Length: 366
Image (cartoon, rainbow, N blue to C red; front, side, top):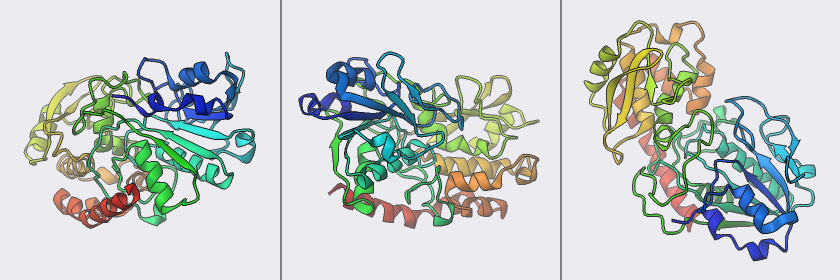
């Protein structure tokens, strides 16, 4: 398998001044990160770097703003797109002929690399700068969850796609050009020889480096949409402080065995639950059928089941209803859960939107 950065025409790039949106999680086939590879191939023609949330070097925490800087070895600017600015300014883009984008995304709307890529594409279209998007695999292959209600558009909901959109970076770029930016000068460096099916990472893909501190494995990226609600319901812990972040969760005063017994009795397709003991006593999500696993539907099933243990789930101190709605891109999911609707009925309500999205996606790929 060759990821997009491995297929670039470096000879053509040497005739241009190149900027790079990336981070240290983006590896080429030989193990170098994309920035190091481009610097080795282009030398002084690599003139600027741009970093998403967590920073170009990938060390900042969730929501932590990063500052502008200078690369310690190459002496070129490292622009932050998660600080004072979240969209490149004309001054940042000055002197750049082509901007290469290479981010290890995970195919989820509320994961902010989608917003950053969208903002970069918009800025380049506005400033007449060519863009090359280097593709990478994502763990999700099937869209899931509600479409975006325009009232909740924001940095964790920047595009009218499902909560799990399952698009690779090239898929996102083509979708945005087709539906929003027809003037964008876009080249996609697609994956080559990808043999993985479902969510499994191809065996010959570059090593996985966490694209953010909480996404510590490919499996975590797959399960993340099933437990990201913990950011809005702090009484439910999702193990952010350990190596099983987002793959485990616990509820105060509830044993892991009781959690698992209840959840396994709900007939949740594609997943099973097992007791897991970390700093707390909780449950671990195991994906039993990758083709059937729908993480957003699983998240709703978990929340519906938790009503049995805590009828006041939504009224506890610290609950952030507004953040939950932003993560899900709508208030319809929360309102249905609070009204006692079944998880199956909530997931069924998404089907029309998902079908429309698939049609829009197909049109964008032509």
